[in-house]
Length: 181
Image (cartoon, rainbow, N blue to C red; front, side, top):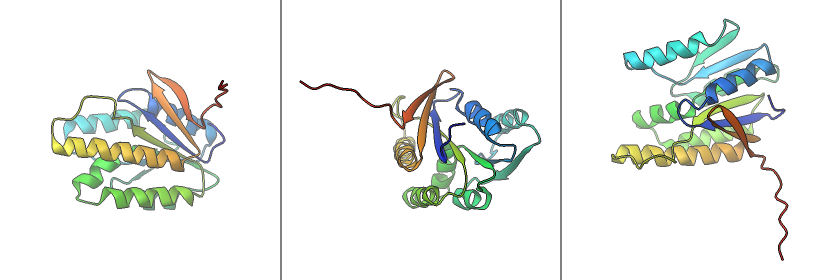
């Protein structure tokens, strides 16, 4: 893992972002916490959750936080362990479907990132490159997800985009050596 305190790992569906974040967490510390945000509302989601569980060994402490992510981060973050949040996208959909104010929840998350007590990896989907959603709720979610990713990327020490299993460093950005005439 990079020596950063907080890292946002972005990517599309099945891009390899969760696997990469897990590998970094496992390389960083033997003391690891997964903060899971998924809720199993149907059989397909139960299968996805079971698949993710099968990819982790018993050394992982797991905290479920489908709605109260800030409290889970506050309770688990420490200098001697790494926390992996998987994923911000499901957390955002949970809070929106629960009728909570997404802007206020995102503000609280960003404030917590600034006061972070230990290393943190946050996984999130990049959803703004696809088709325009057909429903108002879908468009509202896409817009909030974009704002969430921007705010979290700004608050984190580093941001990585994963495409086809390949990580691309977004922040800190490499220096541009432009010569202007």
